[in-house]
Image (cartoon, rainbow, N blue to C red; front, top):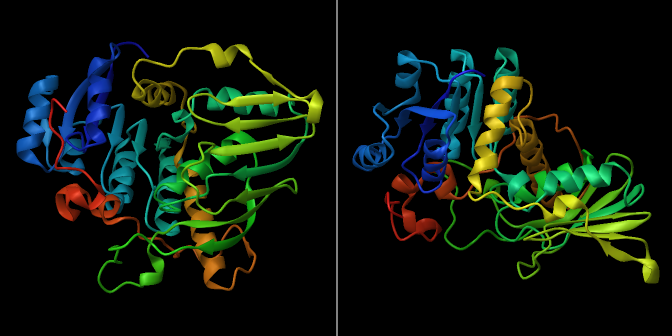
Length: 362
């Protein structure tokens, strides 16, 4: 693309959104044309700090004025569907939102379908960059370097929220194995103390920890262990000729079995990480802007993770019976943590452990 990418950041005065704002502002190929945020005083401080001349309260106000090339949306989950689809219908080339993608499967379906219909690349979350060289490791596995896959696991389990946080491990697992989930058998644990469903909704639909078994395409099983946050391994994969442990800060790759096994260190493990975690996160949007099609770490990926999470809760509710995917009832949903659902300005910053709203210098 010739010239700079015209970028808008929606929710850029929030705890997570300020990272996008900072990274776009520092990128030589990007021009931030607008900051959208309802927190007006805080918004203006961020806009002044990063030299953003135009601010709005709502996405619709932005799109009525101009259509950027890229829009990063960092809003409460309840606002994701409307904001994403408004951008797609307006002709934005690449749009991103944060996890979980939506409350219900029907909303996630609508977001993915709308973006595909209008030729907008939809990205979601940051799972592909939360462990170094995850995608290179996935390609290494896919090339047969540990032989045909025989099993997989999420060793640390899903300790807090199966949809709100567990979508990261589920997305990593799908990327690492290259498989889709065909069925689930689930168990759940009580949600964190103090969590309540929104008024007039079912308490059983609150997000919570979970564990169980996932049947992957190709006939292999992924075991989700009972929650154990002490373990570092996000995803484990076994093949006929080796294993991979997706550990931070770098994966552990082993070829061979038993006494003949040994760690190996492909060149991609020696690459340096970017100085800013969010740099590859925003650059996937710039690539999608040029190339079209699906963005890396896509809305489809996070829709699949939401569906797996919902199926695990449904299985647990129905005496752990095997539930097959895709789910026919797309109205099924999970209510995430109040902070994720409504944002810190409404739910309270202390609801998830923050001392208060973000500051420019923070």
